[in-house]
Amino acid sequence: MGCIFCQIIAGKVSSEILYQDEEVIAFRDINPVAPVHLLIIPKKHIPSLAHLPEAESPLIGHMANIANQLAKREGISESGYRLAISCGEQGGQEVPHLHMHLVGGRQLAPTFG
Ligand code: AMP
Ligand code: ZN
Image 1 (cartoon, rainbow, N blue to C red):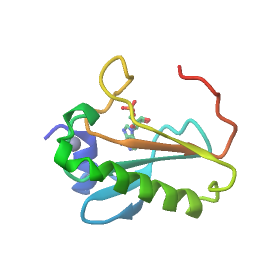
Image 2: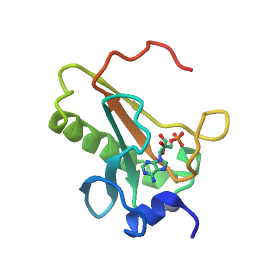
Image 3: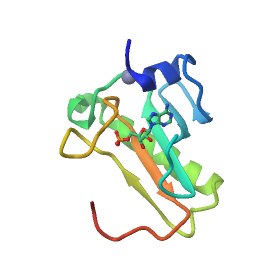
Image 4: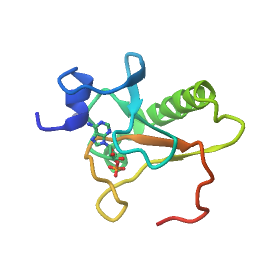
């Protein structure tokens, strides 16, 4: 099992875990691009958003809800933040395990890279 995020879920790779339940886990990005940069991921290995079965799409709503809660906890709920899911090569996805970025704590650029 070469997936780095599955290894974090299994506790084989250490990370700063901020939240977990039966379905998802959230931890700090190892290479933050802003003062707050968290990743919310499903515990189930789903390679990308494009691989998410339609029947499992409520998972994305759950991840967004957890992101909202974590944004409050991190103190950026009022100032604002961005949720982002990169999908596939041209979408800039580097880790092939579905994940949602929660980024905030500074003014973000209005455009996509
Ligand atoms: P993406 O480019 O959307 O696939 O994002 C992958 C993110 O995972 C990057 O922001 C990396 O910094 C982050 N990342 C990779 N390995 C780890 C790790 N071991 N712990 C925390 N974050 C990681
Ligand atoms: Zn995985």
